[in-house]
Length: 212
Image (cartoon, rainbow, N blue to C red; front, side, top):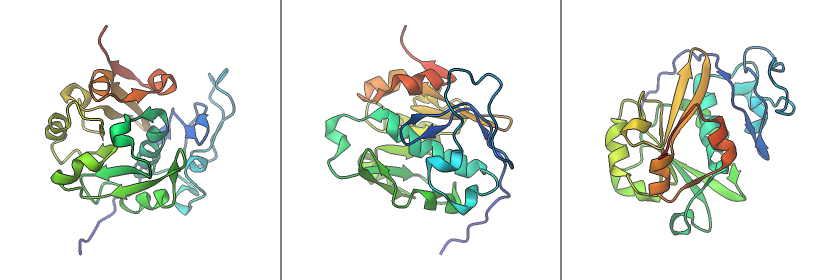
């Protein structure tokens, strides 16, 4: 058995919030209840990050960095369409190259569904099984650029927080700016894999690689 050492959680603030029916307002997630952003006009009401997963103890006081990233991964599924060749009739699959990036925060995804289909989570995915994944989170320590090259042109959404990931062929790069988390999208790579990203998701990306 592996012994997983959990680092002290960082309190994260997210500018992008999601919920089950769409995109939420801009607000901060901190040790206290979120308040409306000063520039929140036109966004709708503020939504607690905890509500976009479930009522979970790890969200009771603060959203850790790992918890926020797990929430982003889960909600990306809702704004991406896969081609029928991989979509599958029964489930969606989130794969991870490592078993220790998110620790117990992955337990939040137990029993979750995406568009009525169950979401399966596979850690330490074997290279031979990558084509069974809808989304692959690549640990920054696992040479994300190698995975991006391996998956080029395939309908698999590769995600990593490794700096410059989308410039190396990855599809979504998570960006941390101080205590805020955002993301950027490689739309060229997504188009090559026949992946369709919703206009809502594209609007919220901090950066998009796309052909002019």
